[in-house]
Image (cartoon, rainbow, N blue to C red):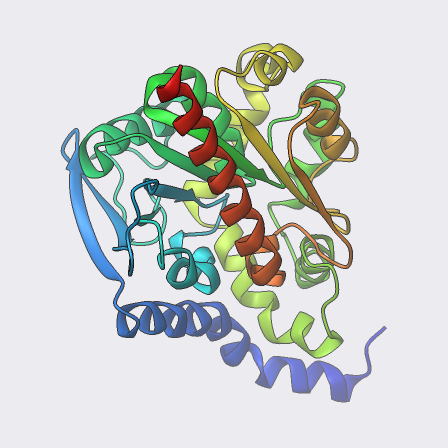
Length: 318
């Protein structure tokens, strides 16, 4: 039990805790804009979709766009640590999925299904990006990247999955604890989720950010998406081994070894079904490698992009 004094201190700090994540995201956005990143909007099926774009500093003949897709309860600013550096050579797009960040939802809708988000991404790739691109996705974004690769393989050079969701494991039962925890009913659960998501987080940060984290996951767009996933047919929604083994584009895998946010066995599913894929396993890193280990992720994305460029060049010579 917490002492009465600590309880009072935590109560006083609640407004600060609620403001912590919005403050961090606001600073990240200002940093991007000051660094030459453009905030843009495109209408897809009448829905305003926000994204950030950075033109390459020195575009080369073998360059191509890189599209970054965030995960559940997150937004495009999760890529703020790597976007500018990645754009030294490549045009970079970071999209806010519908209902997240500055992107809207269709009138009368409170969330979109995975397939609906995939369809939005398809139009985004064809209109806002407009050429062959590499796609990188974290968590739900990785799940979407796999679906997108199957939907429009001719538009995608390759995908990188960072702690991706969607592993079938033992079906719906494997995801029940995740679905229950992600609702974050109290501050104890908020601190638990923080520990599950991050490889190592100082105790004060657990308390500073706990209310912000709860509010992120209790937003209607997240709650109803999760409820829909938990009630949907897992055979339809979750990935299959064949979805990865017969993937029509090359794939790379990045994973934080301290990720306890996703159900156990998720890493094994992706690693086992992407044999030969370039892989980077990060010690002391959790569910968000792009935030926790941005330099390592940046190096991996550049390496994978170089492999795709070489593969593309060789195919033109045949």
